[in-house]
Structures are given as C-alpha cells and as structure tokens.
Image (tube, rainbow, N blue to C red; front, side):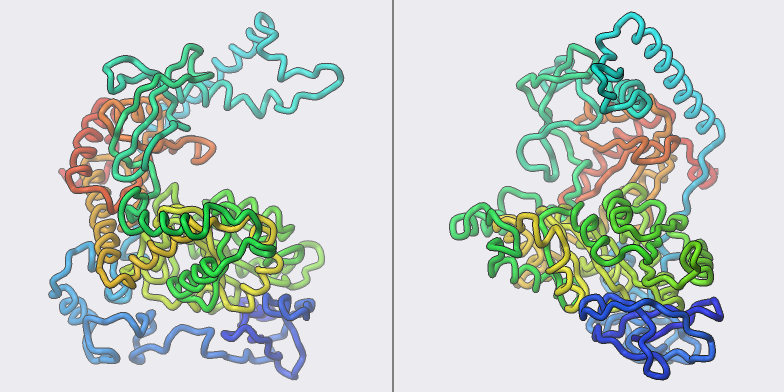
Length: 624
C-alpha cells in the first residue's frame, strides 16, 4: 500500500498499488484499509500517518513523465499514432498543432481525436449562459399560479368530490400509502403539464402525454409512435390504431446499432438458434457460458482494464456495485448531478456522502481538504476509504467530466476514482473508448470504470472494469452478478458484435465511420442551435444536447409542435432537472443524416420564434 500526502500536514490516504497487492508503510506497519485488503481478507482500520513519514512513491500511481522540463501536461497513450514524432520535445506546441491540422481530417475529427494536442477540458467546455431575469421571473410566476390553482382545486375537490380523494384519506384504521403532499406534484403539476393534443398521420386530433409514449418497431433513425386518445384529460389512454413516424431524437442510439438488419442482427439471429433466448439462471449458478466470458474479455480489452464483469441491468450496475466497495466508515464524494442509480447505491452503502458542485474541481479540492483534515464525524478518525464518483458524460447537462483535473487531484489526495461511463462509452474518443480515450489518459488512472450497453451498443445491461483482484471480489459480493439473471445470449451477442465493429476487428472501418459521424453531427447540431439564439447546454462534442425551454407551459407546447412536424424528442422537467431549467433534450445519433439535422433545425427555429425561446444574449452579441 502506497501513501500519498494530502493537503493536511497530519493526514495521508492510502491508494492501491498498480498490481493490486498490499505494501507496507514506513517501518513495516500496515496503515491502510483498501479494496485489495478486503479481497485478501485482511481488513484493517485506517491510521493517520504523521508528516514525519515520507510517502513511498510508486511510479505507477503518477502520470507519465513530462517530455521536457517545462512540460507537465498529460501524455498521450503510446499506442495512438501522433501527428509528430514520438518524444520530439523540440517541436513547439504551435508547430505540432499546425502539423496535425495539415492532415486531411475534418474539424470535428481533430477535436474528437485522442491524437489531438494534449486535450484539456477548457478547450471544449461550454460556459453555462445566465438566464435573463424576465425569463426566470415568468417561470416562477407560472409555477406559482399552477401551485395556487392546484391547492384550490384540492380544497374544493375534497369537499365536493370526496370519492376521488378517498385514496388520500385514512380509512378503516389504515393510513394512505401515498400522502397528499407527496402526490401533489403528480396530481396538479405533472398531469397539467403533460396534457397535449396533436394532429396524427390521419389528419385527426389525438391526445398524447409528453412522456411515456409507446413505440413500435426499431427505434433507430426514425421511430414509430403509437397514437393514443384520452377522454379524461390524459388520466388514461387508449390506442387509436394509428401510428406516427418521426425523426428520432429521443433515443440513446448514439452509434446507430439499434437495427433490425445488418451484421449485429444476423449474429443475434444465429445465437438464438444455437444458445436460445435466455439462460434462466444467475451467473453464480448455471447462467454463465463461454459467450459471457468472451464478452467480459472483450469489454476489458475495449476499455483498457485487466478484467471486467457484465450484469443484465444498467441501473443495478451502479446501485449494487457501490455498496459492495464502500460501507460505514467510508466516504463517498459525489458530483451534485450524478445519476439516480449512483445516489441510490451510495445511500444503500451506509457510507457517509458529501457532494461537490457540478464538474467544479475547485469545489472538490476544498471538500477533499476539509474531509481529510477533519476525518469522520464525532470521532475524527481517518476515513477507511474515500471514493470520488463522477460521470463521464452527464445525460441531462451534456457536460463532459474534467478528467485531467480529476487525475491530478487523485494523485495529490490519494482517493479512489469511480467513473460512470454509461453515456460516454462508445460516444466519446477517437476509438469510442470513453473519456479516457477522449482525453488520451491511461485507464490505469481510474480505479473503477462503469458503463452500460443500452446506449452506444444498442443492447442492455452494464459492466464494471477494474483490476483482476477487484473484479474477482465483485464476482462473489456483487448482488446483481451473484443473484440476478445473467445477460441473455442474444443481448450478449449484440454487444460482442457491436464492440467488434467499433474496434475494427471485423476488418472494416465501419466503427470509425460511425464514431466520426456522431462527432460531426453533434458539433454541427449544437453550433446551429446556438447560432439561432437558443440557450443550449453541453460541452463541445457531446451527443446529448439540452435546449432550455424554462416555462412549464412550454414543455408540452414544444413537444407537441415538434411531433406535429414528425420530430420525436424528449422533454425533461422537475424533479429530473431544477424547477426553473426545464429543457428539451436532443440525442444525436450517427444514423442521422445531414438532411435529418437540417430538417429538424428548420422546424426548431420556427417553433422557437413562436414560443419565444430564443433568449440567448451571447448569440445576440455576436450578431451585433
């Protein structure tokens, strides 16, 4: 076990060595509690190490050495071809960038390539634009009116329509399962916001909510929506028997592998014939097969880790892995905008939880200094483990994690780093390898890499990739691996084939084309929206592009108007987002053509003018 000094002179944290084995602190005394000691069955309490003990430096815990005395930036993976001779420190950064720019590649390819010149987060960060005051005031007023009318309707309803409120009252000595206060938002805001009417493909009026729309067929470049009608203000629905085909901006089909024809579909069909449709057992019993082992090896190779496990549900990947790795006496430091699966797993673990501002490394550094110097509450004993959990790509903001700064903090403070790559794996990086590939940082600087197969791979389930010791431990202790059903053979084959195509192991460059097409589409679509005057979140290159609509009445209006023009999107409001930043989320895919994007942009601009959504000051200043 190697110790790294924190900013506190009297505190150090233990970090795992590269080979997962335990070392000894100065004087031969074991002084730390780590993931590797759990797996070896040698759980020990953590001790403070005074500043009199110098840290034992393990080169594997640090970044690659600089190419020159003044160069302290990250080095690119050795196996990625550089646009300048390796080790040529005499070339200036400008010269190297000019050489790279002279290659016959597009702007998007240069920006989305790990071969780019030592990418930094500041190069792609899009600053969040401040919302105009009048927009905020009108949004709050709209919610205030909704809430006041909701309470008024409740008061009158409980007097004159008692039967409709029977489920909210105590009866026969039983308290209601759903409290009046907790269900107020659902009854009086959600139900009001989601009510929409639109003209379907048969030119007749139909009702549909903004969420939970049923589909049929393959959700690829286009999607078929099942039209529904409602006679009770969208409380219940019935199918009308018609469908509406629309350009699909609502699915996480980043690389376009959600297909019913093609190499993936053919391989899945053959697998069903040979291995059947389901294993009907967890991996720890009779649910494992050579296909699962092959998939785990392929995933580990793809993300650059020694080993990996796969499970059948993406949400459970986080919610069951986190409690396995940390428990009472440990500390989880979580980004404030982390996914609910991370929040659920953190709460389930019993560990203490602290939150830092979204993607703000200064906030994280101050928090680390505080928690390390103060230790556990009341006792002030050192934490057994500290784990920082972030996402690679945040699905509601479209922001990309500042991984270079995180790696520097990990080196300084010695915490475990857990990165959720549910949305970034396959979608970011020249080879689709996620945020490590995107920044050109070795995956060895991240302790736990988590991801799901539901986005870029057109499948289902999730994975955890780490050192072999950690993965062997998770095979025994992770509930989703030991007790849940294994990934079905058709789904496993879909993942295997898609990874094979992405890596180019099929002998084609189809995977690279998809990755490049996604990068081009994402940059083009987001740039055009900003030029039009919309307030758009998301960093450069993100396939998730949120467009702010703010006002609750504009949530269904924006969705309805786009659906009338055969464009399907996902609109998001509270509680998934802050109450004043409701948004429409566009998920760009490699399957979208430039014609699809231009068609959508034309109608989005038209609707934006109608609903007064073009409130960006930055776009107005550029025009001036």
